[in-house]
Length: 294
Image (cartoon, rainbow, N blue to C red; front, side, top):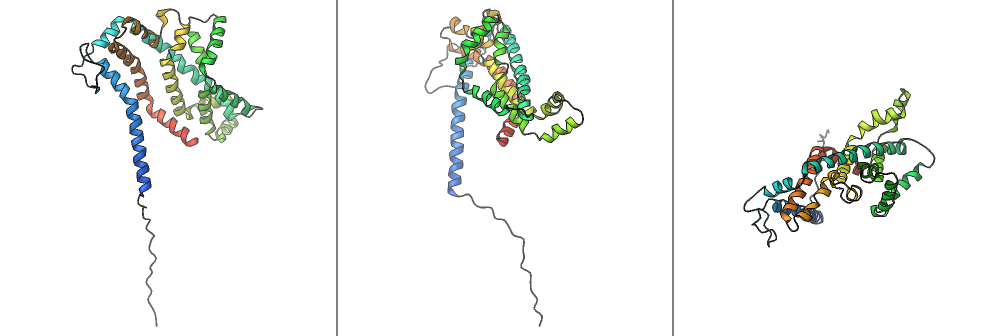
């Protein structure tokens, strides 16, 4: 007697596990926390824009705060532009920011290359010493650096502002981690083909870490553009002041006019926003790759 058997082997169907209550609560709490932090960060910025666009007869400090002006005006921006040499300050800030971005990219990548790709005695100790400098507050080194610049006759010049920030431990760390993530087989293949270490650094590794370079460039630009205390100490001629230092005169010229101070702050902020929007894709890629490697 022949028994016909029916195969019951069916492809297994993976059932998605339903979200349990704990995961739902965690997701809601995370979004609530992120929304709360975002509101805290963006409200002062919106208040500054609102203040800069309000006329002289409209209240600024009111409760509840009024973010949308009744009559939007650009009078405050025009007054600031006409009262101070804003184009000169913008040019000075551009010069300082240009060198404040170019030199860290060059020197930090040169310092990170041997720490990541070469083998020499004491390499790890050197790297740890470089990282340890990140724990030293800038105020501690401000006076010694000022005295050194004074001996070198660099007080009052752009070189005195630029050179102390030409290389940073954070930049070296950032680019070293980027170089470490690249397989060393690429270096060995290039060296076998006759490439020198300088050629490996410039033609092979640098193009492969462009997102991290863009991240360092954005951070360096923000630091150089917003730098206030050091240019204030070093520069002596008002014609050489960057925008941050130049706008400080608003406090003396317009003692309690918050509208003009807000307008000047918005003018100083616009270049940073433009640079970030232009390079945000590289910044996100660099931050993502750094997080993955970490």
